[in-house]
Each structure stands twice: as structure tokens, then as C-alpha cells.
Length: 493
Image (cartoon, rainbow, N blue to C red; front, top):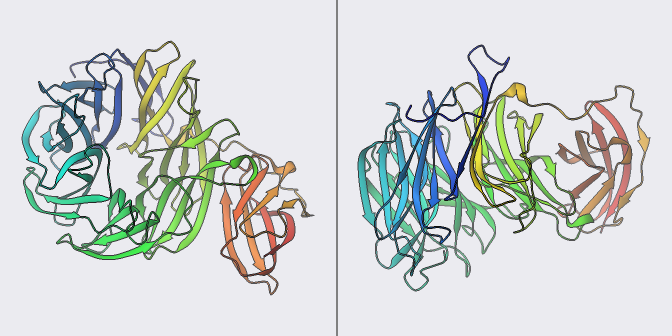
């Protein structure tokens, strides 16, 4: 390794060869780390840095971190225009297939070239391709998503913009099929998104037991609605389904289950309910967009909201990591991050809070490591202005359940639920089971179960979306662990 900078290195009982560590690397330029992948020996991490004294002129940045926490870094500067490394997938030979964007100047602030490179672990470019954007499109954003298909080819998904809107995305997206040398085998531009805003993708994932790919985002089915869209191996759009029950903001998928369901991480916002609560959740969804189950695992207070970007890392059925951070708008107040460990049945196995004194933390990505752990990293800024590259290595043994379950909890009749009657949301106040893992079951008057919701952190308030229920009387039952602790009833208008 060309450079080694370790702040913390300690042994973990998870494995004799597994370690947890932290890299803290101060940089004057201000580095943004947004994506990468694991090659079995370590992790590639990519992004960009501000190479012109805060002007917004970004140049590409790369880091490779081995399993011991040793790293090598590299900056890529191209005179006269900017660059950005967006994402990667690792190949069988240990190299990374990397996609970025190039082009533009400080005056027009656009990217006009798709930049594909194959890099080794020393961050040397083994192969490189540059593809100008096809007319009538001009701008590439830095949101680029990659996935390997069943034939060893790489599928690339990204937003583009029309020439008359050079600084914004406007619902056009493109899909490319590439070989492992970076040659584009096939490409297709999609401009038939629904509504004024068109379609906006936020992720792509391979469908199990199929050659198809699933794209997640907005506007594939109806205007501005969260949707899923399927494309075949020839990049033809074959089906789209809405996700009308999904409430707000970004959403990502990284894990398919054997039964045809997938897990999706999302940051959401309950408008018009107590404290306008923001929360982070994981949803289980079937292949046609039908809701199955939810785990709400982190909820912010009234001054912060919970945010996330590339948040989900699948290390195995019993180790799925989701990273979020608390945000206080655009101020420089210190914030921390919450990392969650779940299994594929939406059981919360533990949480880990990451904090740095006097520092604002924005976790931009979470990815697996070869020993069943994860790396989380992003933008960190001290309150006196200095920027840091921050990388945390975490293992399952670092995560703890932050509550104790009382085996002797009695079932109590409970009527502190509002509004009652309700049209959309039902808020259940639980003062005596604050900050415990809860499950709420909703049943009709005939005893038939309508749905269940899981909550990782109740913070004394459970907020349920009951808008899909028919008019009438319903019963709710709150469970802590295997114990029923509260029962009540409400009327759906």
C-alpha cells in the first residue's frame, strides 16, 4: 500500500481475522465519497473532491481499502474540465469496473461524457473508454447505478437531460449494456416517463432466476409516483408497477428474497401527524409492487430529520446493513449517524450510533466487506470548517439492541390513539414501552388480520398509515417481543 493512515484499530470477537477500524483523513479540498464495491480482499471507494478552493469544480477521487484498513488513494485531474467517479462493480479478477462522468466547465457546470474505466487495486487504469452523450441529450448527472447480469455483462443506469435543460434532470434516463472491457454493446434512452417530471431512477438490481433487471424510482407508472420498472436482456421495457403506499423521498433496493420479494430501504416523512415525524424504514415488497411488511428502525426528534443515500449493504440473509444520518438542514451543527443491522425477515438485530465530536456527518454509502461486515463512509465536516474523509469498518458484533424486554409485561386495554375516528394515519401513544422494538397488528371486527407493522424504535409513538382500510371498526394490538402489551380499537372513516 502506498499510504497508510489509521486512527483506530481493534480486534473484534466476530472472527479471529476480522477487525473493526476507522479511517479519518483530513483534506483541504473536501471529498465526497458516494459509491464502490467489495472485491473479496478489500473495498473500492469512489467519488470526487473540490479541486479549486471551494469553487465547486470537482475532480475524480478514488480509494482502495484492504481488510486491514490500509489504503491507497488517487486523484484524477483533467485540465479544462471536471470529472466524477460515481460507482463500481468488482469483477472475478479483483479489478473494478468503474463508471464516472467527465466534461463541462465552471461556466456551464455540465457533464457531457460517460467515462468508463477498469481499475486495479493500486487504482491504476487498466482500460478506459469515453463516450460522448448522444444528441439531443447533453448532461449526465452523477447518479449512476451498476449491476452485473447473468452473462457477466455490466448494466449501467443513469439520468440524462435534454439539451434545452442543461443543468437539471427532466425525466429522461438511459440504460447501457457493457462488456468487462468497457465497450458499450447496446444502449437505450427512455424519454416516455409519466407526467411533467418524467421518470427518475434511483437504483437497479438483477431479478433472481431471470435475465430481467428491475429499476426503482419515480414516474415509471404514473406521474411522480414511486414505481418499479422491468427491462429485459435487450433493454426493452416490459412492465411497470406503482408503489402508491410509499410516502416520500429517496428509496433503494439491494436485496431480493428467494420467494420473489425484495427489500427496499427508504427515508420517509409523515406529513400532518405528530411532530411531522421523519423516519427510516425497510419495506418488503413483492415483484408487482404490493406491500408486504415494514420495519421502522430509526425516527428523528422534532429538530432533526433522518436522511439516507446509497444506504443498503447485503452481506448475507442474516446480515443486512442500512445506514442513515440525522440532518439539521443546511447549518453546520454537529450530527451523528445510525447504522442498522437486520436479517432478511425484517428482524432488527441491532443498531450502532456513529459520532465525532463537533462534526457534521453525512453517510453517503454503505457496502459489504468480505468478512460479513460493512463499510460506511461519507462527508464529514468539523464545525470550524475542515473537511474529512471518514470510513468506518463495522462487524455484526458491534451492533446491540438498545432495549430490554420485560417477560412479565401484562396486556393492558389502551385507548390513547388519535385521531379516532381517522381517515389516514393512526397515532398510538405508548408511554410505558418507550424506545422498545414493537409490532402492531390491525384486525377487523371478524378477527381477520389486515396487516402488521414492525417498529425498531417507537420513541413512545407509533404512527400507522391506515388509509387503505375500508370504512368501519378495527382493533389494534401492540406486541413487544412475543408479548402482547396493549389492545385498543379505532374507527376508520
